[in-house]
Amino acid sequence: MPTQPPPPPLEITREDAATGVVFVATPSFSPRMRTRYLLIAGLLAIGFIAGAGLAPDYVATMLQWLAALCAVPVLLMYVVTLSETVRRRAVRLGVTPVGLSVDDHHLYPHETIRDLALYPLVGGHPLFFAWIDPQHSYGHKAELALAGGQVLANDAVKAAMRAAKSSTVRLVMHRRGGKRGIVLVRGLTLSGGETLLAALSAELRAHSR
Image (cartoon, rainbow, N blue to C red):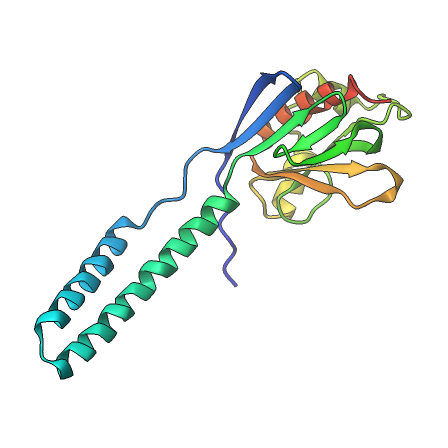
């Protein structure tokens, strides 16, 4: 069974807003428009419609049906392009005094956040943890190095990525009280995920309680 192609790498930027720090994960390229096929199908549909106006009635009906058939793939391609645009849209993570906002809509209060973790995009075990809950100690060497931006992908992390058959990672926020984790960003490169995890966790720790 063929595997799904990985989503496009994401570029991470940081913005200083009035309410706090905002991290934006943006796809490095936009979904390609299938302009050639759209143009051909559109020209055929226009030609059939124009021909139906000049042809006899028994021929005009057939040409109108052909024009409708040409319009179907045009609509389908627009739907596919729109769905790709939604799936590959930018993700905004804002650290405010109240909590973590996702896309300026969902707000998770600071007191409910337990940790952030990087996972392979498909399955697998967490590659890195960054505890936000102040009740946890920060004695793990990998976490301290990650918070300082000094992480290099070791053999164990590379082996976990290979085992999961993944070239990209996802950033997950775990909540206190055993609640289900929230996937914040998908399709990060390992280095981009480490950078975002370290920067976002540092901002969240400043508000943790």
